[in-house]
Image (cartoon, rainbow, N blue to C red):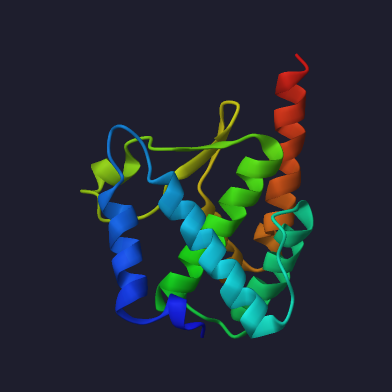
Length: 160
């Protein structure tokens, strides 16, 4: 695994993001940094580039399908889950106009869980949950399907 995704530096980065979840919002720069680190890891690991396009969501489905087939517990690869979730959220934010939001969920859990929402219009999605569900359930919880549905609903709401 990419050295940026291991060890004390990775743990410190995750702790910093968790600590920065407050009533005033989410550490957006930290989330973007995690996404960039994941992009570098993914390219090192697979030889394929990610470009924050909708096609990257399909690449994540294929990547996570490998974990599903191996019956990997998302909790055992939490750093990878967070990296993928940050990347997926950034694809949504950049392409559908979404924004990271603190809806109080982390605060309700004592700030112990990193699971911010990305909101497109008034439609929220939790990328960490989506990634965990994709690993656990497989194709039935595809990120591509989720992204397409979110894009469709966002377009429908903006045209009404």
